[in-house]
Image (cartoon, rainbow, N blue to C red; front, side, top):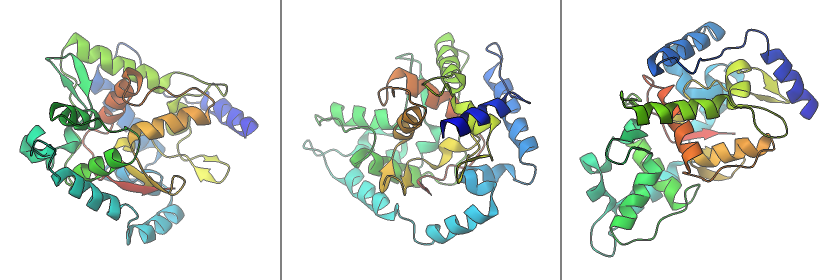
Length: 278
């Protein structure tokens, strides 16, 4: 496999797409969209929310059959029950969120001016728990993924709308996320962009590499490989392991910044989480 991946990297040197550190987020977004529009001219912009199934008819047919009886339905129901279950003090998660937590997931992550930090949905769920005297949940799977799945499901159809305000701290976080996306790492010396930008649509063994455009719209994701549902940061950790790099801590600054950049690159697309993938 290492030889195969090395060959893919060699191909990436031709016609490689890069972003300059000085470019504005909007300029980055315009360039990102334009790149994928040219690479996959038969894929409508709005269909990129479907990942690899937006670019391969055979894979899409199989996926559509799975979606007739979605494997994540039970997770949504579990999440709904957990969301409504009162804490020991009698309050629920709804007390912590705008609009009682319904239809807001597409706004995450966001830059919080007061703290100067990027706030993800999963981090907000745990802040809610702690402020109500409850222990935090683990970030990668389990109850956290179920609650996140329910909240994202309630936000389906809304357009992703991540903002990078003209605040040096927000711009710094955005650029740190961009650097994470394009940085080579691990023994295989690969970046997120190597697979999901330069080689999107190419194969690693029998698997097609999905386009990065729209990546974050369908999380949390039920993966057949996992036999369950997991958060975006769980997937980031798995990707790092695949290139033989030590994963960062879920909800640590590295993945939080990466999620900020990665999500911004899906602005204007519909939120359609949770999703089902291989």
